[in-house]
Image (tube, rainbow, N blue to C red; front, side, top):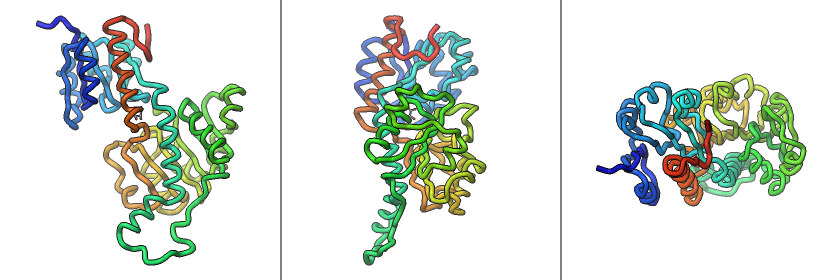
Length: 324
Ligand code: DGY
């Protein structure tokens, strides 16, 4: 019988991850697209010391109570709202995430979504594919400019800062941001970004980008009252987490043209998308792919591998969230 610690990989992952982990651990894997629910996850984790986790794997007090041997849950994502960190700390289970390696790729995608939304790229492509293009027209799919406009960034962590630099240096945008804590003056200057109160951010932005973490405090940070403060010509881009935006209120605001357009990579209750959003043409919808370049997804997975091996084999995780 193997003496290796047991690790569960609850979702499909790169084959090289399996190769690396199987050198150190006895693995159980789920190489299907099915997300295991809490009961299956708890049953599978009974005898495991580690979990290679995705944002779809919820780790809470109930799961921890059922898995006495569990020592580490290593997310391959930077966001960790799937972890109840307080419960993990109480159960002496380490959580790790995958910061930094996805910053630039995600910031790139912020611009992909912003440009597609402001310049109506997907809407016009659907029109063309449907055979509706008969001639050039002066106002056909005329959208908003990105260059030279004012970008508002809500949440100014690593990804927000990457977006600010692209905006100021690449697109000549004026960059405003709001964050609980202000950046130090040197970082502000590097990002060419100016801190403003949330209400001013909402009122002044031509384009508003959301890159803040999800928590009870940020739940519905953008709802009907906030949307009402935005310019009718504004676009809203959500790269952060579903739940930060009240999707029903957003669909209403888009339908009533209280704001011009939205680009959304994340949704409340994803992969289900609010049907009212699906019915609108002034919204660009992508399936949570902001960090999905192959090199970056490999780097994210590698960090989860390094955390599992680092902690369970050498006693040293790389990016611990709740070290003791
Ligand atoms: C993350 O890492 O939190 C992203 O949302 C997944 O790409």
